Structures are given as C-alpha cells and as structure tokens.
Image (cartoon, rainbow, N blue to C red; front, side, top):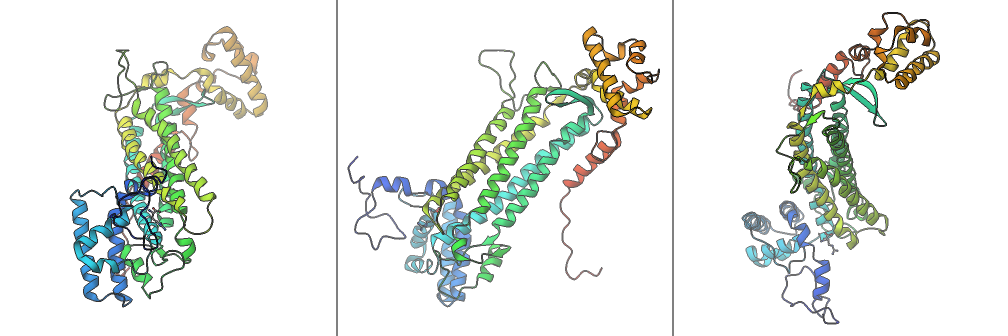
Length: 478
Ligand code: ARG
C-alpha cells in the first residue's frame, strides 16, 4: 500500500470536508466508515430527521414548505431503503447515506436539514430509539420462553425428583419447583429490560455537537413526537451518555447467564446417566461419525453465547471508562456490542424455547433417582417433633446414614434395631418419615416445594405473564 494509505476519490458525499485540502486516505475510510454496522439505524434516523425538519420550521429556520418538502423527501428515502436500496461503500455512516439520498430526492433544500444538529446528538437519538424497540422485542422473546416453562412445569407439576446442592442429591422436590426455579430469574431480567427502556427513553436531540442548539427549537415537541419519556438536561452529557447501552448489555448478559444455567441443567438431565429428559429432534443434531448421537446443540449454543454477551458488556465498559468528557469517536463502536448482544439473544431465546418445548420429561427416571438418604433431613425433623434437639437428631441420623453406606443397604431397609440404636425415640411410624411423598408434603411455606405452595407458584407465574392492564380513560367515571 502507498505510504499515504492511498487517496480515495474526492467525489464521496460528505457531511464535512471544507477545511480539508485532500480527501481522506482509503485506509482511514476503511477504519472510520461505520455504514456496515449502523445502516440498520436508518428507520430511526429518518424518524428523527422528520421531527427535526418540523422543529426547524417551528424555530423559523425553515418555511413550512421547506419543512414539508424535507419530510416528503425523507419518506421517499425511506421507501427506497425499504425496497432494498443499499448504501455505497463511500457512505461514511447512516447519517451521510440519508443525507446523500435526501439531496437526490429534494435537491438543495436538503442542505438545510443539518442546521443546528450534529451527528453526535443524531446518533445518540437514533441509537436510543433502536434500543427502546430492542427492549420490547427482547421482552416478548423472554415471554415466549417463560410460557413454555409454565407449560412444561404443568406437565411435571407433581413429579418427584431430587434437588441438588453441590450437584449432590439433597431433598426431594416436585419437577415444577425445579423448572420454575429458572422462570423467576427471567422475570427479574424483564424488570431489568423495563428499567433499561426507561434509561433509553431520554431525548438527546437538541444537544447539537456538545453545547446545545443555537436555534429556538422545541425539545418538548421533539420529545413528544419521537415518543421519549423525558429529555436530557445537559448537552455535554447527552452526546456521550451510553449508560443505557451498558444497561442493556448487562441485562443481556444476565439473560444469557440464566439461559446458560437452564441449558446446563437440561444437558446434564438429558445425559444417559441421568435420563430425566429426552430431547426432541427439532433443536438437536447428529454426529457425522457416531450414528447413535442426538446432541443438544441449541442448548450448548445458548450456553456458549452467554460468554460473547459478557464480552460485549466488558468491551463497552472498558471503552467508557477511558473516555474524557463528551463525544469521542471511540463511542462509534458502542453499536457493535449493542447489536451483537441483541441479535444473539433474539436467535437464542426462541431456540431455547423450542428446545425446551420439545423435551419429554421421564417421570419414572426422575423418581428412581431418589434415594432414602435424601430423607435424612426429614428423619431428623421426625426426632425434633418428638422433642429431640436438632443437633442431637442430626447426629443420630448421621450415624444411620453411615451404617447404610457401610453396609450398602438403603436406609429404609435397615433393621428397626438400627434405628432404635441410633436414637431411642425412633418408633415404628419412622417409615413415613422416609417417604419422598411425605417429605414434599411437609414443605408448604411460601416458596417451598409442597403441592399447595407449588400450585400457588404456578399461578403466580401465569399471572406474571398476563398482559398489563390497559390504562383507563381519563374521563371514566369511577
Ligand atoms: N458514526 C458516528 C457514530 O456512530 C456518528 C457520530 C460522528 N460524530 C462525529 N463527530 N464524527 O458515533
């Protein structure tokens, strides 16, 4: 390559350049042009540009005719892009592209649209509008998965299975209780997305490059027209505030993490060793070598993609941390992370929902995995109900577990004499305390695995998915 990086032809449509004697190098353009990433912002840039044309009329910068001409021109540009017109390699970014097409549509009046605004407040506005929509799309994809969880939880509402801590058998639970343990994290994720939407819904337009707009445009009108909840209060902050992207990336990373844990459970439970779950055929793949394989690829890809979303979050935070005040070009890369994490989740969420929907739960295998030592806590509680301290009861049951392990005899098959030797207060009703059915029945506090508590939990999950009530009309007589 030439030492000067190679000069691009002068003819590219540019939003700047007057003070430059020569065109940028091709090497600089290759680095600087962001059209490959930000092209998808075009519907939002059109929207805000139409609102800006109106605002300029309101500020007496444009005549009504000029403003209308620009609005119609922007509609024509939108129609061209909508029907598949692609950018030129020489378009620096989406704002330059729309400006070029608008010149083609309206002629010279297009040169007036950029009065009082900068790409700094423009890109911040378009990215916020995009993010507000993304929050909504992610929310409905999450709801789709949550609905599948509820449907599947209903099929295993009272199927007994082991719960685990440290991946060691712990205490029997109902299948629904286990599956819904993956539902509530997604509810928290939805709350985070709602908060992210609120952070994004603050209008930066009118902040100019950094110091605000010198024309008396109505920001109130811009806010209302574009559907923002509020407007920024400091123009320096407004052009560089990317907190809303960091928030979306954190929410995305948490969603990814939650999906990863669900995927991990299903993958383990789907192994031949566990056999609690039988995978379907729509979201799995075979092996090119081993004819017997049905691999849970969708779940593995979900688990893997959580790592990339974490990378996106770390990448943005590292960028923000090093920046001096206001807009700096480093911020151009914010969209790579935002789009990557959102696109990834919008692929992963329906796939996980589909993979879960086609799982068959094998209740007999789930129940067969229960062992009587899992009722050790219930056995200790049995003694506590007879007046023994929990510490003594724990010790007595521990001795029984040791005997069961040493002799290789399941606890409920040990001779009654072993029980009385472990503690004198064991009597013949002890076999009840060794039943997994009894074990779950006793756990009826809120949030526990008892049948009533799990029924209430399922109801709460169904209620969480009901559409929000539509606001009552202000004129309604109550
Ligand atoms: N493409 C730029 C971005 O995405 C637009 C803002 C450019 N601002 C500037 N002063 N060069 O951040």
